[in-house]
Image 1: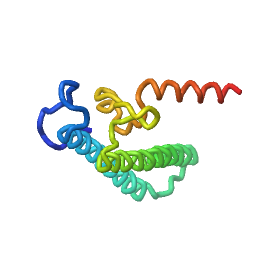
Image 2: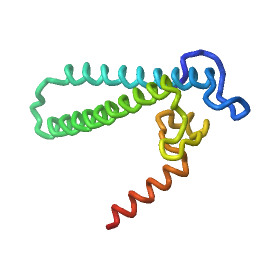
Image 3: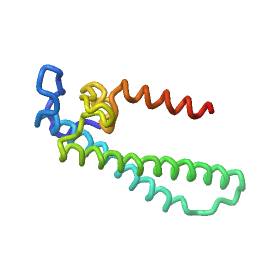
Length: 138
């Protein structure tokens, strides 16, 4: 999931937050991530087509079906991830990328670099997870 730009640029707290260079860095990173997911998905489809043969042994067939189900669940999660990547790319276009949905404060470059689809600051994310835990315990 490396940025395509080919440079060794890394966003820094020493520069204005979400300047054009940072936006380009995160846009490239998100696009490369999406392309990786789509490439893996295409490989999965090809593998599933090739594995379409019937196995005589019931244990082999069961194992193959389990593997296929796991792969399809993984692809479904990645489909949802692509939607989040697309939403992040839209936020970059709209100049709202990098700002917490709850507080409006900058999310932080290190967090965005680690999780470029983040929509909450660490503090807001922790509060969200705490509320989820409380509701789950009810």
